[in-house]
Length: 243
Length: 154
Image: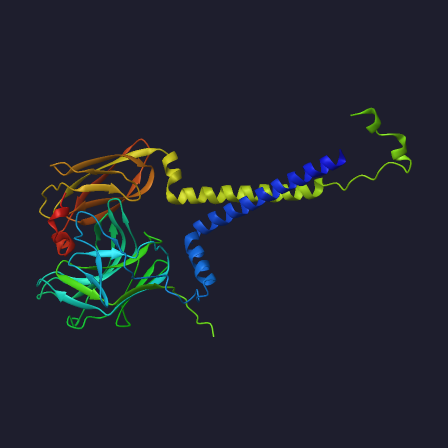
């Protein structure tokens, strides 16, 4: 009889420890959610680390054969892979599929453009974005030339349900036009509520907004431009090489 | 129990068996931690629900009304939605709109026309209609490649 009581107490103790573990996991999940950290992001980094890669310095996501294309009333199509890179038709765009993170740096490189019309030339980077049921939600950094009579401008904008919110988060006109025959590579660093844009490695614009905390990244082109690029990736912000 | 298996005095010839160690003290500590974690989890869940707007639904809903014009003062048939919800409606031919069922509290109403949107912060009170006044688009709003795509015009 004493043995039976001990077995019962042992079983009861196990149930209590199981409950304890469940509550610890629940509290940790809720705390991470409150801090804006994605559990999937942590999982991905652990998996990357287990594969033997340097988790801190590997790209979080990189251009591949698949893109999450913008499909709504206004975008004309997505991004097509071609030998040596990718092609974005006028008023087309896409996001890195299966990727969502809060802080990162996105790099668009090997850029070439063909301006298919004399107006609405431009291209840019989408970040902290997702294709929702009603259209794109997220942010964009764009270089845009309306026509030959207007200066080229660069700006951060916010998108809600597929519409661009006015006024932009931050916009400036460039004192000298970019070389459209040799257009600049682009980077955007996304940290907290602050976004910093770079063209050919030089900081050109900084803005801030609190609306979207996480999301994917992508590339798009304006209505009068066909864009070709060789690579696009999202890197972690703080990468320390292990020696 | 068979009679032969009944306890006999022989079992206690060396005195009463010592009491097994009291597991209740350890158990009380475990339960204190369990209750603490449960309270912490509830607090965190409450904070998360407050932040993502779930609690606002419990606070009730209200309505918002307003008018939409272009820079010439002409009424616009625009799409009106509430950020972070699936609520949306369109303004009528006179530019007037009314959107019901908005969770009470501070909300962002997006008025969209020709792929361009303007945001308005509105304080919605449960059971009441908040007048947002006029939403007015400027010609400069459409100096943009995106708004040249006519397919998005409501």
